[in-house]
Length: 605
Image (cartoon, rainbow, N blue to C red; front, side, top):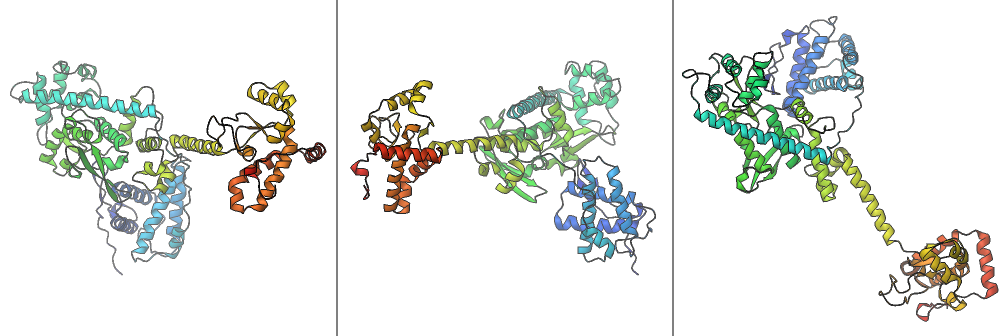
């Protein structure tokens, strides 16, 4: 029997900083199982190119399982061990997850799914698997995923407020850095002078306090407490350096004159998102090597880890070489300038970090200078939005910025195809077209389309009442039409199957000329007004149209008279069969006829 390899499995990933995620099987009560799950994770990472965040989550799931696994399982148990003990232990672990999280949480569902995928990867690599465990893996996850509400966009007012707040923060940063550069040039080593000048203190914060040198925290706190930094910023007085937490506040404020803070870098990333519409993780991982371009625009390569693809976005530059501009290219240049001190520090201690676009320097817990790439989390972005008045709607999620930009594009371009940008139209419709703006625009588009259809519809206005009654009760144009119809002669009645409200403004005749298309186009004209008195003539004119139908080809009749016949039938259906029968008898008794001009007559007339 081959002895299992229980050596540590080395896994590294970058979250807030480089993390050693090594899994040591001997640290757990079930080392064989730990080694097999760790090997499966390494295999998945290599074959699927898992992003660092996904890799971290899988490692957390493995550790959670191994720590919670029942001690009733043998220490040597593995994925190929016979019997149902391991399956029973897995089921108990998965069942207990429900008590560790809220009912609406997705985590129990995610944990169960990850373990099943790891076991599947282990089997796919050619390793033996317990038959009962294989059936458990192929079964559904015990817990259903929690219900989530799709993220909506920020409103336009919120977008502008966020943009303005970020611009204010960046202006403030650049002002501080300019002051810091001037003081740095004027300063000297405070160990040979004293810690009583702001310029010397800034010089000391920039050059001193690195390991293995002693910390400079006490000197800086004493200088702040002595009021030597008050001329630089009155905030040092409010920081109360000798109170609890005051030393950290003083050091952060002092470092802000040399390096951007996490909140400053979040402001840069937020504006870049608003300018380009890129996802937050795309900008977070950009390196200086990814930036190239000309004096007119920069080209930045963005990489999306989960999609395993990269793309190049064009970042235009305004005048003055981008100095003071707010376009995407200007922001990239200003960000590189703002992080120059941090990049210089990185070249001395960690050259790999010097290539990161979002890099800064902070004092570590040991009070030593530490360079780090800003990896961002929701806290800084939420802190930025919380500082804005009036309050920004929740949740404070940076992904909403991407939806906001796409919604603005949809509003401006009036096209989901163009707004989809780097997504396929199908992905856009499934994930991004659910925003409020796109819903409103969709409603407006439907209304516009309906209105266009209604505008193209042609036909008369129908009033189901006799003209004398309408003349007594109505007013305006309708009353005038009813009076004219009531006082018309029998000859005028034969000439008109409807009343015409504007005989010199027909859509079928040049404006100002008497309409020449009566009665052939009356039932396809918006100027026509039909009263109940017209029913006998309408019945006679329907017979005229039906005779045309017998003489013409279907396509020809549909083009010339089809809409009229449909309108006539619609009006006739408003009357009861008895009313129509009475009208036919009236027409026969009075000898009612409809005059059709020679140019409009068919063979049947």
